[in-house]
Image (cartoon, rainbow, N blue to C red; front, side, top):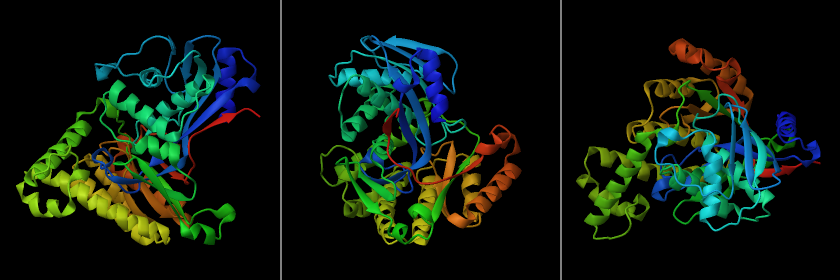
Length: 414
């Protein structure tokens, strides 16, 4: 794939192949911590060995010229053109993320003088699937623009810049989980991000050093099972509505305790929640219950991961999935079917929705030596349940067997 990306950049730019640089931005999964990042919660993340590649060379001037491996057309604009937030989400296209990266850098005071000539490609079938492909794309553009303009920014800086793309430019009220996972993950570790303080911590998987597999590979793999339902989160009203409901629950609980803190659930003491949760109406009570129960699962998950207890970790992941359905009320009929099929698959230790959970895919952790068997089972069972949807998914993209990945990086041609 790297060679294909580089070849396309050479064709577009007319430059020598040795000049081509590539940003590799992995997709991410969130084993625990579903839907609580925007409430200042603690979330877990790791990347996988699939993602977005952006090949690029510096422009001779301020022009940006881009092609996509997934979408038609060429986009052209200048980095010295003032970018304004998109007012109508129906106008969001694949080029919006590149413009959003320029917007975020401009509004943070960075001087952009050079553009890029580039070719970007994700994995066919994995865009809009709940793996944070939008954050991967946004970060890819940020890193490329910073590279050609000799800007040296920290991962924490880029987390906030990607948040600016999503929140301020595209109008999506998400938190920092996605960019944090992509920029901070380390192979062999589970990243724990405190979304209140924006501080990460890492827990090493103790069993990795004991693994009998070559190169210290963990004794589990990751299954990604695709529903066939595409989902463009910036155009979704369901996501933003649930964020609003979480804030309203926090507002009511804080008011009942006499606090005037900003209305996010992290500001609510768990004891106050237990004492006052009876004042919440049904919807708000469900959102709050998901938040507080998920925070407990994250704490238990940290301990289970550290000691290499995949059985307990899997049970916590499945419980997270169930709470997403019952309390957070996301997941279509098809997504719930897929989740339940995964729970029955041989060797699967735990499963839940990936991403926002309204559409896209489900993830599972599975014993390494049963991963292919589990993938075949899930593919056959879901096809039996949803033959029309499955027919729209490329045969080699219906259930992927993945491994943990590393963080985003710029790869220079050797």
